[in-house]
Length: 396
Image (cartoon, rainbow, N blue to C red; front, top):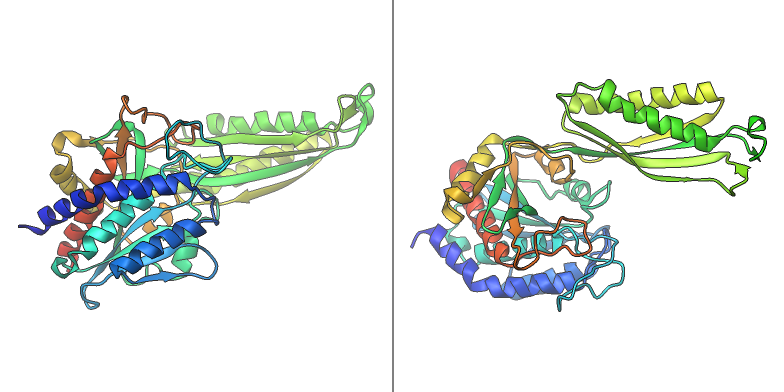
């Protein structure tokens, strides 16, 4: 029996157990940087399976190595582990047991899929054309995410290629979404403080109204995308939070605004902070206010390697058939720190369809009723396992 068929059969044999593990992780979600119990669960399974792994002092990431021969190439697979700070509204028996925390983005599924892939590959490692490293990443949901920490700790040392996935409720279960080139946007954050002068609300001319200044600044910043950036280069500047004021009858002397910037063009991304500060400076000068501006670059745009996407398509035909492959064509403005790995080694990221209307799994991510169709886990494992084998055969 060919290796692909052997691996597919192995994955089908362990699928029920992987679904159970997914439910266990979903029931016990952990926030970014707090993934201790998930880490311990994975370690306990790897100890039983005899899979060597590496842990780290300063975070809960875990790297498992399936070594056929150290002299052969190594490819990597990544699954992220963290949950979100939001409540879950679900009647499922495996719904979150932690108030205000839930796996609303599918990282429980990603962890389970990466684990199942590791188990299947390890049970047939002597037949592999090389080695596979499985990276379990913490803190994907935060700006200074776990990918940077793992890269600094050597997770990509000796790695020739990498694959990752994300569950996607906009594709049906049984569909795989792929894209050449830029697939997802960069994800930056910013904040600015406006400093004014207090006064009685009935005598605004004696103060400097920080709320009014912030309002004008927000309007000005929203004009950057529509009037200063080429409309053929998508960009988003969104204000997500505003804080200020002391009482209804007091002119506020301080307002803090924070938000996010998304682009799919590196040159546009580099220009936006300067454009934003120019707008703030102009508004504050006109209104006699002062400001402080802070801009933090997050993960860059996620750009897939063409050869790696070719591998995904080839494997996708084996797993879901030609009809199950979906060319996503356009990038999305969501961010993903898998992009940092792709700056170092070639790789590809794909979307795993999970939409099943009968099971209620077509709800968007970051929603309190989000859930994953468990039937998709088998497909995700097969895609990652067979993609690893295919690229190893090519680079051996």
